[in-house]
Image (tube, rainbow, N blue to C red; front, side, top):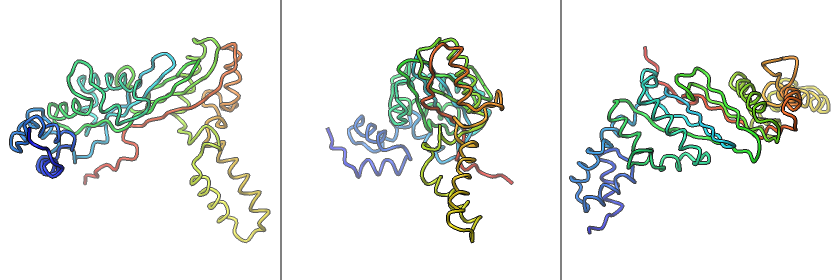
Length: 295
């Protein structure tokens, strides 16, 4: 068998636009024959898919899957919302979301998982779908939550099909209480997260650079005042920031007279046991992707 060198892989990648691992596999399958390796990639639809890979894919769906005390969310992108309404695309997202339950929030692990009913990994299967449907698509990210005892609440906003839509939310509730009551409250809380987009559970969970920026803005607004006065203003400002941006401190959207912490206490009475909110996930389709502007 011919030796597959890094230079050969690099050359094939440059000529086809296909990923290095697929190029290496193609060369191995064709005994290092560059032309045959190119044909191998084309036969699998990967070379065709690679030509579309530079096109912006900022639409698509977030898929949600929950199994017992584990929940996962995955964002799968497409170029247009039209494809996001395609039944084949939706079926693919549903299957990928189920696989995400075992990926523990690791996107690369998810991409290399075997796609059900196929001999291909998820990334390869998506590449085949690119060739079939004719749009750039990709698994962008995944996240997961687990609890030892309790429930994973979920909610999908702008639902396109069961378990998938434009915004997907998971919340983790640790509790030995009644599971039906916990699930009902978990869904309401997930709806709250979808609506308010909290930065963290509490101030301790807000990234240090975000807090530093908030402090700097408050201090800059109050230049010229005594240091002790500025210190109090900054402390008060961060408290206000927490009420607006930290989940446990936010006004509960289903009853704004209460905070989320107070709503949790109320839910404990119905569930018959203490409830601890241990985490949340909120994925929005296309969030942070720079979309092409058309005149």
